[in-house]
Every structure is written in structure tokens, then in C-alpha cells.
Image 1 (cartoon, rainbow over the protein chains, first blue to last red):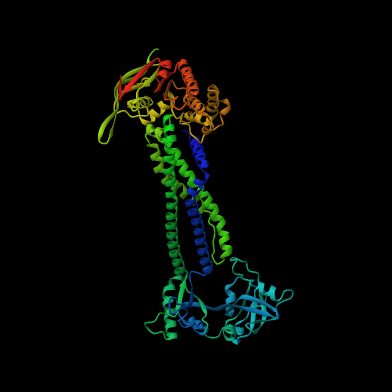
Image 2: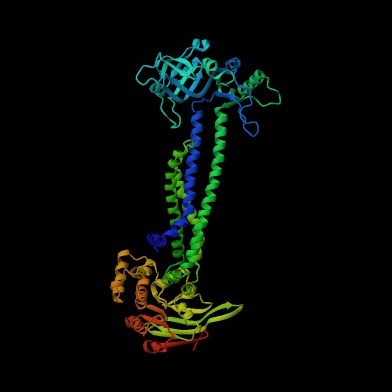
Length: 405
Length: 224
């Protein structure tokens, strides 16, 4: 039998029993759709992690207060990193530069205008050197003297400017953060939005010493980014930093460090480990769900072989070879699972935007490679689970089959 | 009548039932000439259908040799047997055995699917055959929409699709009333008149005597 005729015969037979065909393919539909969605969620999570650490150079490290999670002692039990301690890191021989910052979210007010969830970032004056030229579009960034004197000045983002100073020049104007008055001295250029959940233009930047003194208090831990001379010193610098803070905090010998030190290599290592775990989980889930779908197909194909025993007998009697029968039933199984794969991909693609609309915290990024992969897997499932019923059909005794009631 | 289309030599078909060996066919030796009309008769369970299906290459023999159109079918592979069934034999069954999901036309076309004929050629041939059996108006109908007599005429058209020299009919009138039975037998007579060899299994001595040149009697698997 020609392949084209076989395909036509198989499709006609499936179309003859539409509801049953659909229900049979349902397992594959659900399996493929969930794999597409899971891959999208995994990719999204990975991209979110990557974007957090993007810009961290290979000879840079971040230091933050260790957070403890668990039953009974939830939250922070370690001592905070103070600004002075952070500045003191400069004395370590491996360290070239130190950048301390403090960030939080707060409400910015001017007269009756209020802007919420604004990022409030306290940094040192040399922070601006880490940004591209032209970062401050108008006015100036604050100076070291501002930091030393704890001057109440801010540099504001475009969203803040548009909301609070809609039709005027914001430079020289006043605004309040947590009831403290600040003078606007600079305006940041428009920053491209890369993550729809966070508006990078809704931020104010102020001298870190001012932030500690007037807004956050001394107990708030600062985050520190340090740079070492070269990559090879990461390990020794990590040890030196930990030792520095143990001394500064009088940490008992049996207690854990108060700080956590990250470098790009430790982040990428952890990231690739979690990506591997996730991939394994995904493969496991895909195997289970598609095996369930495949068993569904095999079941229905076996029932179909029994129901169509006489048809098989007739086909053998008029000249079908055993291979023709195998081909016919195998194509039916593969067609079932491929159409299941097709619908599953469509369902997955439809579900992803719905999911991210209702749960914006879940980043889901559709990867186009997952679509041919899903089809490939559906093809394999159809073949693997279709082969046994097909062979069984072809081995029927023609005379018995013709007399089957 | 010239050469033998079938030469059977000590055909045996044994099977085991309840631990005992039984014979559906025991050392049957006979020959059938090309162009003959042969009826096989015998009581129920005597082995007449087994004999017919053996000649139709649907039963694997346990003993003997059988030449069909010059080839020993006991030595052919599964693939070769399928080819013999497809090219040399047309089957007609008591219960018609049409595929319920296909139209009359598609049912008739079926044997040509396995001989890889071109699409338009087989459609044309199937239409001609349905016209010949008087069903030009019923081509698009499914078997459930046809009467018994019509269904059996579709089945005969299907048997003729690949123009086989041998027609094997298993109780072709068994499910039909006498008028429809007569028209089916008239069709078989026509095929015989064209030079085809026709072998039918029947219970009905009147049919056997009226249509066949020769009758083979079988009882308990043994030809009498």
C-alpha cells in the first residue's frame, strides 16, 4: 500500500470516531502543553536570575547580610553590615574598590502628588562612575562632600519627574521621602524597561550617608560590591572578607558568618546546578505524562484492533501484507499522538500569556525550540506505544478474523 | 477446459483441541481446471470452508502441496501469498464483509490499494464494476444503507477489482432471499462464462446442481 493511501485510510478511520480520537489524544495534549509551559517557566526563571546578576564582572563580588530561613528563627539573625564597615573593606590588600549601597522601596511626595513603590537607592558619590556617560540627563550627581555632609539632595528618575513635576523643571525643586525634605539636583535619563514588573525610571538616588542618617537608621545593612585585582584572587578575597567581618562583629568561633559573599563564578555554578535539577525534573515529568498519554493510545488502539478484527481479515483476504496492516495501525497511533502534540503546543502557547497575566511574578518565556522537541517526543510516543497493537493486528489469523463475531 | 488452475496433493490441516489432534482437512487430493465452476458441499463443520480458505491462501497447511496457477503455495512467503490473494483471487463472503466506514465505491477500490494502481485508474475501474453489477446509483452509499442483495453485488464488484482468474465464494447466497440469491448466482455464472474459475461453498444442493460443472463432497475433512 502506498504511504499516501495508508495516511488517508488512517485519518479517515480516526475522523470516523472523532470524540474517541480526541479523548485518546488528551493525555498527549496535557503532557505536551505542560512541558511547553514548564520549559517557559524554567527559562523565565533562569533569565530573571541572569538579569539580576548581569553587569557583575568576573573580578567582582557582592557581600550581603546572611539571611536565615527556617522554622522558629525566621528572618535575619545575623548582624547588619554598616556603612563604615563596608568602607573599611578598602584596607584589605586584595580589594581595589568598594561600592556600598542601600536600597529600599518607599513613597515619594510633593504637595498632593504621591508616588508609591519608588526605589530609594543610597550610594556613594563614585557610584556614578560605574554608569554609562550621560546617565544624568540634566543637573548633576551628588559629590563626595554631599556624602560626607549627609546633604539632603536627590537625583530622580523620569517617572518620578513626570508624576511629581509634570510640566516644570524638577531641578531645584523639593520633594519628600518619608516626610524628610530633599532638593532635586539631577534628573536621570530615560532607562529602557526590560522587566515589565519593575519600572527602572521610578527611582530616586541619594547619598548613602544621608539615606542612613535620615531614612533607614544605622541598623539597616548595606549591600557591598567590591572589585579585586584579578579573578584568581576571588577565593582568597572571600576568605579575607569573611574574616574581616568576624573580627568586626566579634562572631563566636562556632557561629556562622554574618555575611554572604557572591562572585560571578559562585552564582553561575549555583545557577547551572539549579538549571540541571530543573531540567531533570522536567524530563521526569515529561516522561511520566507522555508515558501516561502513550498508554492511553495503546489501550485504545488495542480496543480498536479487537473491534476491527473483521476489517483486518478482509484486508488480508484481498491482498494486504502483514506490513500493510502494521503500517495502517501505526500511522493511526502516530497521527493520534501528533495531533495531540499539535493541540498540546497550541494550548501551551495560549496558557503562557494567561498565566503571566494572573501571576505576573512568574516569568514565563516561550522557547521556540521546545515546539519541534514536543512534536519529536509525540512522534516517538506514538511509534513506541502504537507498535504493539499494530503488530498484534498484523498477526491475526485471517480466517479466524473473517469469522470473528 | 485446458490446464489445471489448482492441483492439490494430499492437503492436510490439523489443529489441536482439548489436547487432541483434529483434522479439518485430511489428505485431500484433487485438481480443478481453468474455467471450471466447482461447488464444495458437505455438512456443517465438515471442513468445506477450510478447504476454500486453503485455496484462497488464507490457511497454512500442515501437510501436502497445493499448486495454484503453477506455484506451490505451501512454499510461498507471507508477502508472496498476499500478492497471490491480491492478483489471482477474488473473495465473496456469506456476510459480505464490506468495511462499514467506506462508501460502496471505496469498498470496491480496496484491493487496488494493495496493488498500487494509479488513483484515477482505480476509480474508473471501480465505477465500471459498480455499473456492471447494477449499482451505478449507489456508489456513494455506505454498506449500512444498502440492502443485502446490493451489498453482495458490491462485494462481487470488489472481488473483480484486480481482474482475478479465480473467484472463491463462501455461501454467497446464505444471507439473501431467493430473488437476490438468484441474481447473485446469475452474476457468478456470468463470471464463469467469461472464463474465470469459480469455486463456491454451499449448503444448497439445488444451487450446486444448477450452476456447478462439478461438485466436491467433503465429510470430516475427507473428500468423498
